Length: 185
Image (tube, rainbow, N blue to C red; front, top):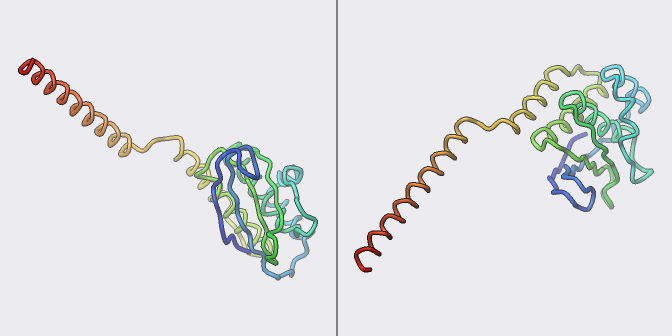
């Protein structure tokens, strides 16, 4: 399973009234773990996953449970890391077997794609019996979210310098205009 395409959509788009992340997830045909076993393993790792089931709308009956679990996991990771709860939905991509559309509204753009990528990695790891460092992933999501709200000192200083340079050149232009007006009347 892997994310093959992602796009950020502004508010009032085709899928949502909020800004959202539109992703295309490609599922492999590996069905070594049943959906029920996968769901139980994920719920052991993320106990709050059970509550996220109602927050994922399924637009088509042909969507495998594993795809819904990826979306639920992304919503739960965002709830744990960012205290952000949203409603997402999933559906099939027409005429593309094994590809599914995931729509996930967001408040923190910087952490939206990372949460979905981490959810995909977590579901894949649980599906194949591998370990996943959940604490490190949640810390990364928090850091990405905070990056959005705190301006970097370098960019803040650069903006201040530009403002001062524009202000100085404007004052200089006004002074030159006043001199010319005084000289030529």
